[in-house]
Amino acid sequence: MIRTARLLLRPADWRDLDAFHAILSNQQAMRYWSTLPHGTREQTRDWLQAMIETPPGEGEDWVIELHGRAVGKAGLWRFPEIGFILHPGYWGQGFECEALEPVIERAFSVHRLPSIFADVDPRNTTSLKLLSGLGFAESGRAQRTLRLGEEWCDSIYLQLYGPTG
View (tube, rainbow, N blue to C red):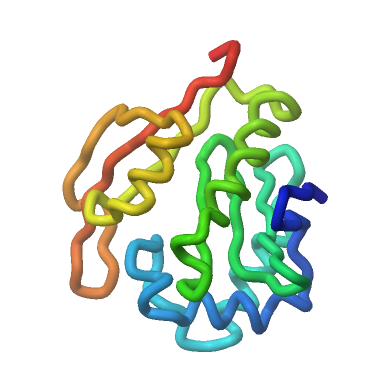
């Protein structure tokens, strides 16, 4: 577990199912996610199971908890790619940055990753600004990298190098 000024970052468990279904079924939260919003609890259950069962050497994802409630997740779902999502009711309060700072620090100090990678939809200006503020720099762009329903999405690739990277 990791404690920050306002948050607890902890491993996921099954009591997080309802909180994550509220996030992952939310159209606004999922606008720039890599899948369409979840239509069923079973879909969220499968997603949560994959998060819980990620082998330690392959990734490290954390539930973001505020006042005892799961409000999002931040982590390296598969090394070295960073990912994060937060319930829209908690946007704009600095929680994601507060959660990502120790995640990034652990990636370099504990897991000894030379760099961290992010794939962001160019329309997701909030995530681009957040990652830029954390030191990520653009490393490339690609068009039509992901199809969600009938919509094609583009990608901006970002990279953050560690002290030895």
